[in-house]
Length: 239
Image (cartoon, rainbow, N blue to C red; front, side, top):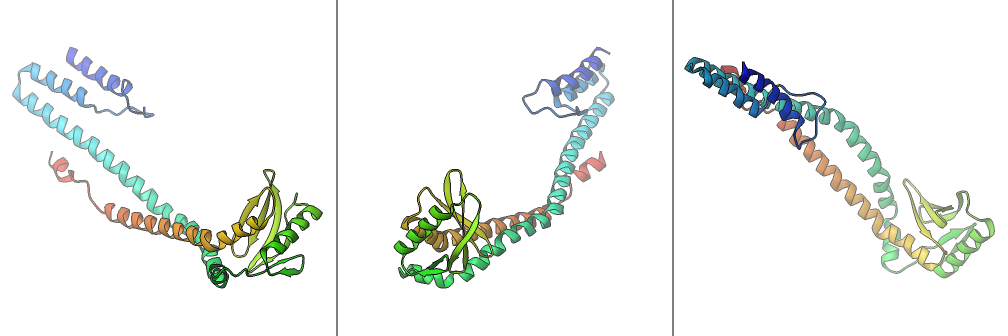
């Protein structure tokens, strides 16, 4: 009777005094509690009771392992169910960037050859950065940029200006939407726009493609792992 009482208390204590994150419910099985159960059987001096206690202990341990296996299985099923929506969102993120990379191919060739493609501000096209920067700065000074407004065109991108965090932001819109910021508009601002077209678009595209490939690989691996049965199922059935 005393061992039975100790065994019951141990099941509760082992789940309260633990370094692991507490769960909302206490499991019925605990390794130390099982040892108390075995000790209780051993104290009777009956080998059949001891054998039964060992068998029950093995079954309980295997049952705990199977519960863990099932929790993992259900988690994988949830992941597989959610993946199509996740993949679709990633594709929607990638699509406009891929189109903008394609649309800016000619601009990148010009910029790589140190040729300024020309920029249109308020209907006037400027063929060098210095004049374009002055026209852009003049436009912002004259009309302000508290609210976003369209001011011109740079290649395939519609240009907008707006203010954010005490900075002037130059927006570039085509299939996607991008921006560069500056406290003071200058030729450096235009060069930052060129860097976005030359490098940033390609870099973002490669990053999203890499993430998408990794997620698809994980999906395929999870799908295969889900087919694996509980390794100790036969042993549990026999016991």
